[in-house]
Amino acid sequence: MDRTAQRASRPPGRTVAYEPPGTAPPLHTRAAAVLEAGWTGASTVPSHSLYPHQWSWDSAFIAIGLRHLSPLRAQTELETLLAAQWADGRIPHIVFNPSVPLDAYFPSPDFWRSSAAGRAAGAPRGVETSGIVQPPVHALAAWLVHLADPGLSRARGFLTRAYPRLAAWHDYLLHRRDLGGGGLVSVVHPWEQGMDNSPCWDRPLSRVTPAPARSFRRADLDHGLPEDRPTDLDYGRYVRLAADYRDGGYADGAGDFVVEDPAFNALLIASEYALDRIARELGAADPARPDRAERLTSTLVERLWEPAAGMFLCRDVRTGEPIPERGVSGLVPLLLPALPRDLVATLVRTVCGPHFGLGGTTRLVPSYDLLGEAFDPHRYWRGPAWFNTNWLLEQGLRLHGERGRADALRKGMLHTAGASGFAEYVDPYTAQACGVTGFGWTAALTLDLLHDRPARGRNGLTALKEGDRA
Image (cartoon, rainbow, N blue to C red; front, side, top):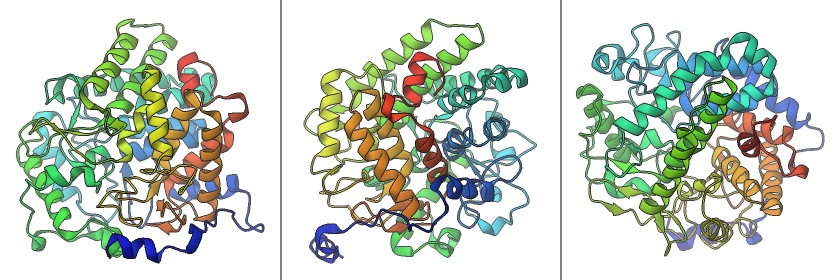
């Protein structure tokens, strides 16, 4: 469908149905039920049908919500993930449940072969994982989980055990993944950045020869509409990148896809602040860590800020050029406390302007430029609105004093979560549910917003700065 037809097919006035039925159970109860259904006893699956294992940044977001139901379960969620860490410090993006059939998800453990192919990088032998990573939200999640019940956390030694693993994770990213040599972390696969199918990846992906379609079977198409999922061509490129990385022993830096991404680096910076809070809690303050967070913020601005676009852009490390696509990733640095005020103001204008439409044509921020040629309101990360990125933007808006906009976004997220059945993602114009419903981080972040204290201008990031209860 071309863009003109897409626009014509939208309902007049873009009617949005956000209010859940009046007879529905309270939103808190419904969100808690989603997390209860996904709990395996050690972690939470994002979706039993589509994502039946443990995912890295999903677990971080899920722990942020779980802390309001059970701080113990939230701690266990993160501990289970950290137990699968590799010796080189990386936290894998999937920890596989051996009780799940191999054909339930692809790429499955027999594709990644982590314990064999990842031996040189220190993959654990007792559990099978993937070999790539996801955005580093984990230290931020650990700090917020600690704040939910500091007494329990101290009694269990939660931060004492988590801190060295989190520090090793950051060290891996900062030292092994500075593939551009400019001080920022690079991702080596679109799945690492978490926004798998973003148009921001189209240009660097075009260099990748896809794996033959007959060499893999896409389990995702059993649970989602093909027109909403990545194309077979793109999926073939994902498989080729992952296979080449595996066959190279998971050594970093040799692949065709190497990108500096603003959201990945912004989340690392936010987690650097969290690691500073954790270290101080443990009596091991390191004055270099907050300085490093501010230095990384300056480097992020220097390398990825694009004034003409009014936001941050990804950089293709192989060509040294910015990627001229506006994705939601370029707005996520709004959550950084040391971001210069003029950049904050520009980002807010961009969020609310014609490219993302917050408060105007959309109530939730889409994943990609509304005016971009590749925009699709339903296709995975090419336009739909996602709850985790909107949660991050709500945090950033509130952190920088944009309380009115943050309140409106919070309200939109809560209403949309309830009306959509906690959808994986939604059409940014109509809030129509896309992907699977009963999705883990949608329910978890709904709980976090319900427990937030917006009337006092507070949220998790203000607690991160001040070190008190969120």
